Length: 308
Length: 215
Image (cartoon, rainbow over all chains, first blue to last red; front, top):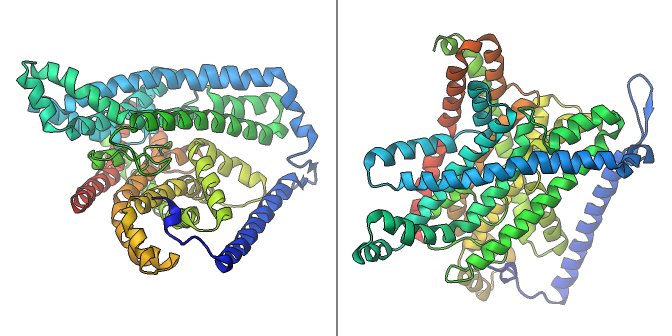
């Protein structure tokens, strides 16, 4: 629903009022931002009387011309830390998801029910706990603990999404597959699964964005990724006066990568939902005609990055 | 098993902290998220732009970074809180855009004709929202909201790395004493989380099915 249905095309009076409110709101926001800027820029005096320069003081920012710093952030942190973990975990998560969805929709009870319990178990606990468990129990080292934790958790969520995709298909798909002489396994693999996968692609991609965000949890198990390198190692090397600078840089890098990926996810979502299942709103392609119960268990809004 | 029974009071203490984190930041995020959602659909464009930017930025940075900001940079800027307070602030801020999006998608889920009809009989923006859109939107919003709360439950675990002694931090302390019972201790922590998340998830799924029939 486009929001402007909620109110009339404003007349002169309403337009003026709206303009006034708009100006007031802008001024309030601008004042807030300026205040924030001033708070950050003000030099502060610590308890023992030493004055440290404000956050925007050049002495705090001369680091941004240092190539080694960027090398540490972008290559060691982002590429070799965060992205390497995210890429491997993403591949494994999709793989697990496919396996989980097959097990979850198997005809044999002794496969289906344990799979359902296991999926609920994995989905109901924090990723961090999974990582800790793998780290402490299997002593895998922090990289594989992070990868495995992310892969299992997100695999469970992708599996649940694929299951709801398979179950939301019209019964006729399976019946006609069987009717033309395919075995049940062939029907599942060649008729049902490809459709479910395409239908759930936006959700899967959005979940992979979540996965990328969650690699930052590996910081807690001491894996050297972007956050760890940017906010632990670099301030130790270059001195704490650059702490705010590093925080800002890490923030911008995360925002750039995630926004790019979300944007990509949105394009794919639009492309796949441009058929019958197109959504009404720009930006929130909520797939229709699917079992939304399971989908929302994945995330409230399929288009953007989710929460966990 | 004896490692758990011995340390049950410690576990319960951690569980209570997790619950407090959940309740306080859940309530905070609901208030903040509703405000942001209202701004997002309001006729005032400055508020709309602000709400959109707020949502997009907060949704795209990892929770760990948000909590890092709260635990290390806020004290530096002169904000004085116990670490528990910082964690609540961080979790509230991080969860609010998801609440806002859930509410907004509920409002968007109400059929277009409803809003048009409300406008056609001359209701104002406020009346349309209050009398027509929200009563219908709310029932579609509750299941996704519950899912946001479930995610929040799991997210409270990150606060354990920022000096808040909740379940995860508690388990780490206990493992330090009883290294021989690591598996049992971690499974016990998992059970504590499942006590919160599984019932909530089932309520959400049931409500969702009800709403789906209604639609």
